[in-house]
Image 1 (cartoon, rainbow, N blue to C red):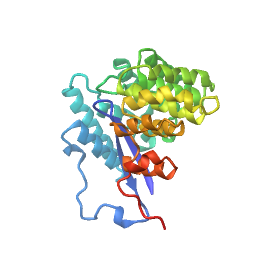
Image 2 (image 1 turned 90 degrees about the vertical axis):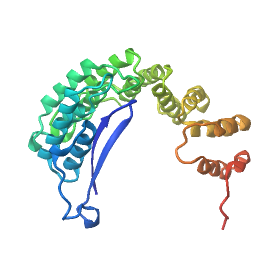
Image 3 (image 1 turned 180 degrees about the horizontal axis):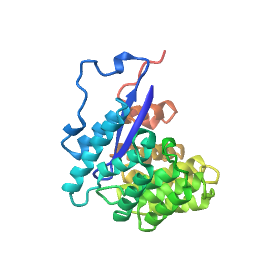
Amino acid sequence: MKMTSITTRVGLGASILFVVSLSSASSSSAPAATSAKPKPEACASAFSCGALSAHLAGRQNDYPGAFKAIRRGCEIETRAPRKGDAKFACEQYAELLVSAGTARGGDPPRGMAMLEEMCKARPTTTSTSISPCSALAREYDRPPRASGLPRRTDKAAALERAACDQGDALSCSALGDLYRKGGPGLAVDLPKARAAMEKGCSGTDHYAAGVCGSLGSMIVEGKLGAAPDPKAAMPYLTKSCAGGYRCDLLVGLLLRDGQDAEAVRVFDRPGSFFGTKSEWALKYCREGYKVMCSRVPALPRQS
């Protein structure tokens, strides 16, 4: 199965990922032969045009139709912009111009120029939308093969650095990742990677809490140049969990440190766990942390 994805962002900085699957081996996953093909001119909103464009490009391999739909979405946004909103359809249009390449009707230089203009207009992420500079930086660091564009990690880092300096937590996180991995024009620099992520973690919004969680997990795993150091990660994970992220990792570390009462207190309050709390309670219980066994509704019988 081949996966094609087009990412857009809308509202509260949430990422909406339109993912369309293509299967050459199974007819059951393909649309019925009698179903009507969606008409690009039929979409009525910027969001529906974005979803339709992704469907046409991915599932139907219909790039002319995909461009028609997303151009319509961008036109809708441009005619009736909502204050503070990201022009996510226009951003998706620019990204499609880059990713499709000239062979499928795209225009990578034009797409990059559009993203540059949108980046200048909204250089930092806000509580209502993620800056298009993020998409532009991604295209510089990981240009689609069809675009024929060279990889320019240095330009990606410059964009993220400028936004990070303005207090954009997500850009600080992205900058840290760029420094951690390096690329053309940008040497690996783990101290700078950690410093960028610490700056992103220093804010007070939900983005900062997410960055704290990423930073804490990297310190636990020793991905920032030093040996794994769970103790050093605790302040970051505590802040992250307070903001609704990575409570699972924090609880695990507290249990390992013998701080059972604190672990239970954190576990019982609202927070982010990958999976249900019952599943995590069962995991902790099976690992020998008896204090968590009472949080398991019903232990399965052991064979």
